[in-house]
Length: 168
Image 1 (cartoon, rainbow, N blue to C red):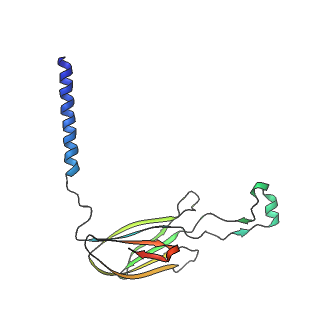
Image 2: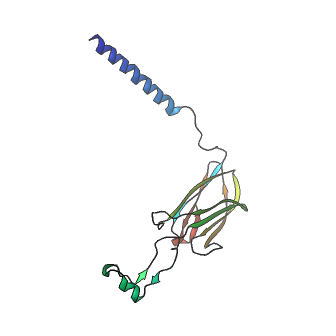
Image 3: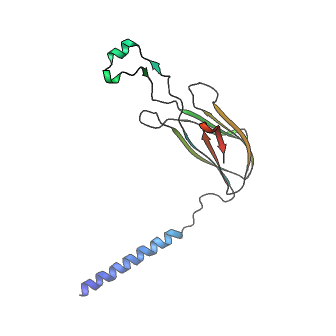
C-alpha cells in the first residue's frame, strides 16, 4: 500500500512537470517569423518544360526488331528540359535558377518556392521563364509595377495555359 501511493505521487509530479514544460514552450520564448516592418515577395509555381528532344518516327527495320507488343510507330522521350527562372526587382536580379524536372525519369514538373523579404515601397518587377530547348532568351516574360506594404505578401504564380506570370 505504501509503495503504490509513492508511485502515484511520483507519477503525478512527473506529469505536472511535463505539462508545465509544454505550457511554457507553447508560449515562450517569443518568436517572430518575419520582421514586421518588411513585406514578402513569394515566387511559387510548378511547370513542366518541353521534352529534351522531339518525337522520332521509327523506320520499318527498327519496328521489325522490336517485339510485337512494343511496336509503336514513334519514339518519344520522356525527359524534360530544366526551366530557367529569373526574377528582377528594380533592375537587380534577385533570383536566377535552373530548376530540374522532378521524377526518376526527369519527366515531371519543375517546382520553385522562394521568399524574398523587401522594404515597403513601390517596385518594378520583371519575371522571366525559359521552358524550351532554346539556348538563349526567354519564352515567357512579364513586367509589372506594384506597391508592397509592411506585412504584405505578394505572390508570383505561373500558368502557361492562362497567359504566363500573374502577380497576386
